[in-house]
Image 1 (cartoon, rainbow, N blue to C red):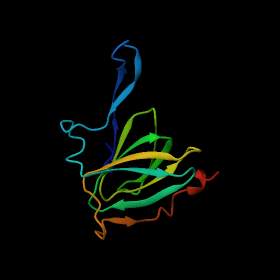
Image 2: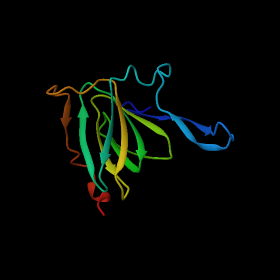
Image 3: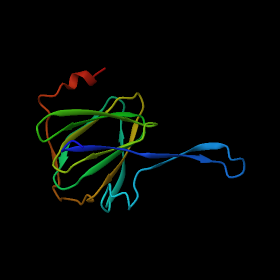
Length: 148
């Protein structure tokens, strides 16, 4: 684990048809209460990012967030406490849960030509007017490499 984020490799299980025993898909475990990855999640939502768009960067002052790519491909750009940038690619079909600590700035870049869907779990829920989120700038980051 880097001091600002962690990549959790996820458990994937093949699923079977109950009559034929043929493989009919898979099941990916994101969270179980006994895994102790997320301590009592208080908020779960789906974040949609249009093709080629960037969301963020911003940080959450109190909340730790966990990102899982349901559909598409994204680059999560994380600036750690030493002001170093980390680029973490997550995409559907490659099950990873990315944990971004509170106080750490991050941005999401959609790297696919379709809308990317990202499931986000959080240990603290959003409340109107709580001023928990802060927009930041990555002035020394090369955003041009994501432009087509």
